[in-house]
Amino acid sequence: MKSLHLTALEAFPLVKPGDDLPDLIWRSLTENNLQIQSGDILVIAQKVVSKAENRYRDLSKVIPSDNAEKLSRITGKDPRFVELVLQESRSVLRAKTNTLIVEHRLGFVCANAGIDHSNVESLSNTTEDWMLMLPENPDLSAAKIRERLEKETGCEIGVMIIDSHGRSWRMGIVGVAIGYSGVPGLVDMRGHKDLFGYELKVTQIAAADELAASASLLMGQADESLPVVLARGFPYPLRESSFRELIRPSDQDLFR
Amino acid sequence: MKSLHLTALEAFPLVKPGDDLPDLIWRSLTENNLQIQSGDILVIAQKVVSKAENRYRDLSKVIPSDNAEKLSRITGKDPRFVELVLQESRSVLRAKTNTLIVEHRLGFVCANAGIDHSNVESLSNTTEDWMLMLPENPDLSAAKIRERLEKETGCEIGVMIIDSHGRSWRMGIVGVAIGYSGVPGLVDMRGHKDLFGYELKVTQIAAADELAASASLLMGQADESLPVVLARGFPYPLRESSFRELIRPSDQDLFR
Image (tube, rainbow over all chains, first blue to last red; front, side, top):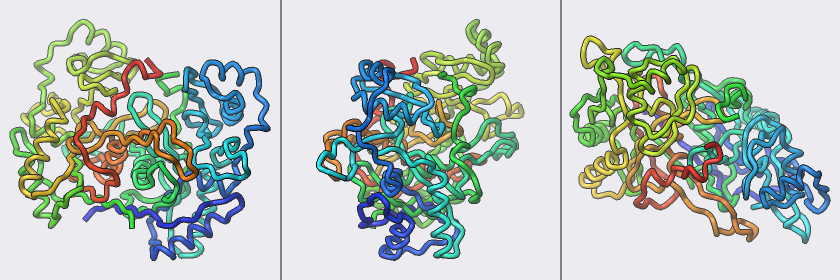
């Protein structure tokens, strides 16, 4: 029977800068009595990757540029925070009260360049000044975790790092892939025939994002106690890929 | 252990106009040896709902309006097809070569008003002239299926109808909810405290869409042999809701 099974690792430890995340994941899998099988995909919340990679920035040390000051007045956001967002971005798509949508340096479009302070562990007494940025190179982070787990298990697996993004036309946030290794971003159904022999015209399934949404559903958002999900039953062959597959080229973007 | 399990019903029959879809689903669950439990959500592909509700339209009988002719020249799409799209839409958001993005009469934004001919079963010899529209009222369709299954089983469940939509900034299509009954569209985390005592600011999780993406991953797109998925382990309480929860009001839409 065709099925997809996702399990969240329980009692995952709080992650601190410098922690060996692949090791924490490997231990947690063991403690959860979960055995990896070939074809499994491990889905990891961006925040624990960023923490392990010490992607914290101290807001009190950021000096806002003129542009950051200007965007701060438009959005109502702290100018130092806006400066950090700009440093992580290629361009600003939309700025208005409470809203700052950018093209992240990695290529995807999101609010606030994925930076936030919610759930950021205290590094000092001035906790509120610490911001957490996205991983430097999420594809590479995923590849390192994958390499370690494949070495431990002898299995061929995929590893994916996810965040939650808003959508232009729909309410609420959903899990999306921001980096992966061994996971197909898109699955191309163009050229396949449907049940009645017609050729499907424009069907590229964003399979990585569909899996990201599945895992995100289990992880929730209110706390970080479930940052790692093991997915079994992904219905497409695993292959080498990059999150760039999911980035719509700006000349195909209807809204720029 | 927190887990989410999705199972596709195998050997689901081809659905024809007038078929009793709740009955087909109930029988298929039995044939698949699947027993519904309270808290389960049944996820159903839009196409089989549309077929059972005879939402076919014969393109050869459609007379295009002037506006449809105009948009046909811009998009390169058949003017009769464009006319059907316009009849199902409140407004056109974008029209260019091969692309027609509309606000559907139900409120969501999608390409071609969700109409297509792929996988549409032959009703006559001129198969290519038959188009399949979205269900008239997907929330109501979901409620009817839910009522029947709750009556059969004595369980409290959710039922969701899904389609696949493109995204403005990301490549590929993902499953989204277009109607449901007993399923929360959004789960509001605003006011919850995170791990470190901060109040989460803007966190509304589009839980129904995350589940839609999960089920869509299992269903695939190339054929319709897996149009129904049973989901167990949805991590939020079921409640009465409407797909309208997921529609971003146009005054909050950054791109209109």
